Image (cartoon, rainbow, N blue to C red; front, top):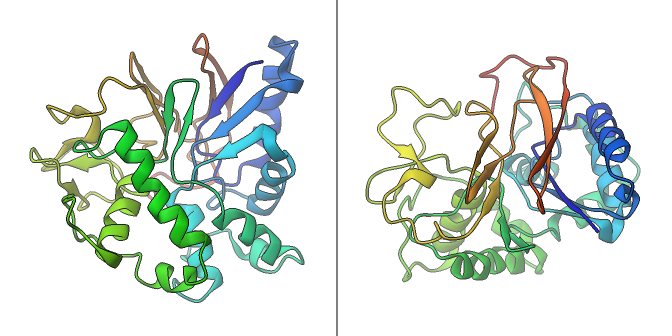
Length: 277
């Protein structure tokens, strides 16, 4: 049975259907395949509600990790964040099954280990091993699934602390973990996160890509991630970046983990690059 990892969907439901059809045409066992989604399944694209419903309906065949837009949806639903001008979340918030959808969403993980690959949305801090990353993701998952999860969301936003320390506690600790898994693109040479280049560009920045920081402790583990459409598809021995800019008029990508076979469908441009990451 095959396992496919998918790039950021961001509400592009019709293109997801097209990509699943393409996979089915090339894999006779696609009907039994497992699907992994690297987060940001909603927002910016035109069909966030249908996308969220479909992935939930796939049941055990589909697993996802949470991205920044998925967390933004949870925060917006509880008045913690105001919807942005480019958001397309209102149909979810007005849906009769909104509560059930959001409850399912908050129970999704921040990181997954599948077929000897670490699956995350944005990245893994250079200071973390893969084992440590999974354990730290579990701390946030426990907060999101616990009785005080809305209070956790209230304290989730902010850029500090930007550098990991094992001694971090409370909201600072959880915020640093969330930022690494869902927002990080760039790091300074000391491994601290750099957030002053919000559109995800790679030029005129004081930092380097998180995966290019020397001495990165999880460099021996294949990591599958999304979140960085400005870089596009990136496949290295131990690094698979799958956000190929579906909502910007790029492509929606999926990769079969066993043999790294790549499947892509072209996408219409739903929003202009730079409208949000």
